[in-house]
Each structure stands twice: as structure tokens, then as C-alpha cells.
Length: 118
Image (tube, rainbow, N blue to C red; front, top):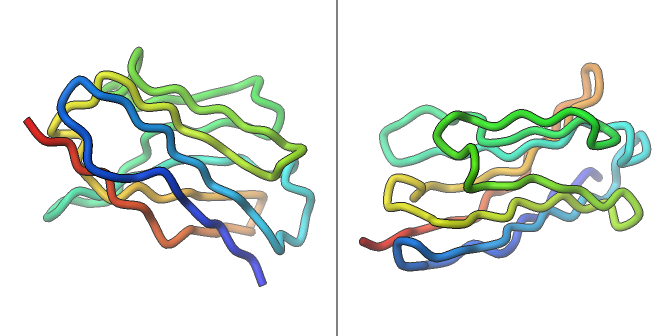
């Protein structure tokens, strides 16, 4: 059974930092095959991509709203992807989801809440 387990969310003041982790298990293909991504969904809004990284880290994508503040990274030996979030703002408040994609395989975690107070 595929499982993406996010951790690291919480409550932080504006300007603060959090580091999210997503540990994958039960994947059919090796973790290093998957494009890994972080998405978020704020109340009343659609889910949006925050950052994505291809299988070997050579290609990354960031939403304009987080460029220069967030950094995605992965450790293929640990089957884990990270999202370092700095200079957090109240508009970053959302549930953050981990995603793994490889061809038709598309898996999601349960999400972790990030709340930024002003």
C-alpha cells in the first residue's frame, strides 16, 4: 500500500520558518523514479502547486508566490522529499500535500496544516 506521510506542519508567526517532510513507502517503482511535488489548498481555494522536483533534482518548479522563500529537496536514499519554507506569510496558510508522479502513477498524502499568524 502506497503511503506518503507528511510532517512538519504547525503554527508559526509571520516571518518564521518551517520544514515539511514527506516520507514515501510502498511505491511500486523506486522512489527516485518519481517526480515529487508539494501542493497546498487554502480554505475556499483550489489546490495549487507550490514546488516540484524531477527524479534526480535536475529540474525544479516553484510557484511565483513562493520563489526565493521556499526550497524543495529530496533524499532518494531516504525516500523523502522536503519543503523548506522561509519568511512565511499569512497567505501561506493552507493544508500542504505531498505528491508523487510517475507516468500514470499519481499518489497523494493526507496533508499537513500550516498556519501563519500575523
